Image 1 (cartoon, helix red, strand yellow):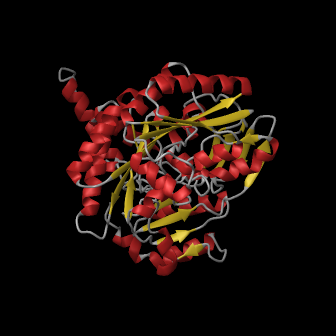
Image 2 (tube, one colour):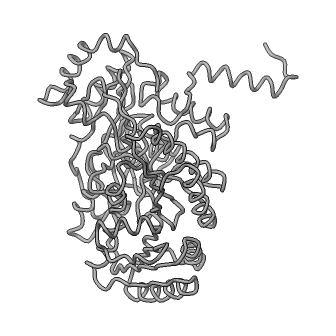
Image 3 (tube, rainbow, N blue to C red):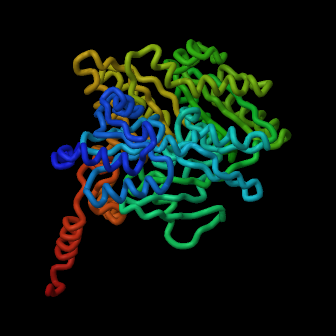
Length: 494
């Protein structure tokens, strides 16, 4: 992480006074060490750092004033949502103001005609569905942490969930944003219309991990709840058979609402925790949800059942009620805390691979598990190849955290080697920051840096995240000119 700015630390009292002028509400500025402690990390608890101060603004004007002050005084800023992120994207800094957006927690408008909801970024993912379900609507992306994670954090990391295969990630369900730049300028991007002209700034901001600005309002797409939804549990004697079944389902043109897979360690841990009725004598379990008109769902269940049988399924169970369907999903959505019950610590990775390489990567992970001497359980969005290996370790044992980090890095390198990417929905943060060169060339990285610096040339927003080493504007321009000269040496220079 960047070294703390001693000049900023020396001005801490003045900064606190300025923040209290901007946010005068009781509890709006947190400065005591004990009260700062809950903000020292996000869901990646292996890395911790107390923030200099935490500010909880209540409206866009206060956010703009805070950022303008920070820009003028060259003070670093770390935006924070609910703190459920798993990549260290909200890791504080000792010389930075952490801005928590959790007081932005209101649903502002529900536009039934345009099938859109306007909400503040601190509204939880599940809170959006709760606000519209009485009229038969819902918000499609559903991360496992949806009961707690905020829509602002979902935008920062481009979160997905178990139903992203059919309905898309956050970027496919966000229609518009209000964002405040580091200079304190308030921008409105996109809206309720289905298409926007000009550059795709909405796409740039979604998944930008707090490096470009702070989102203060969100317009999302809401969908009609499907007429029918049923889930199947399919068990296999090997992960290879389960992976082949996934590939054949998609190859047959069937796009389930959800298509998840768990290996034996994850199945056992989850069943012991939730009692969802999962079979304990299989090596791989597929959870397939089909939704739509009843006649279509009934037909597709038969089709998927036949594919599974041809792929060697040794267990099959179909939900017969809405309660049973939700019970099936409760196991999958509680898989992470289930692993937490059997291991002192765990690290949840997030790589994405081509579906056809699934069996190969799962086998490779077992080899890596033996090499590093640490257990791994696999829970993942099999339909879109988004893996979530859970590496189990004990941070109190010397060297185990370092081994877990090395194990995780090797898994992500394997994902890239087979044609995948470093992250499917958790973001890069600090966890994968130093692995970025595994996936991107130097030129790729420089272009991304130029985009970051176009929004934040002083590198004040969420520093130390995503980029292993961030060049300054002047340095990037010098590098660019030198490289052009080397490529075209015969062109006269003046």
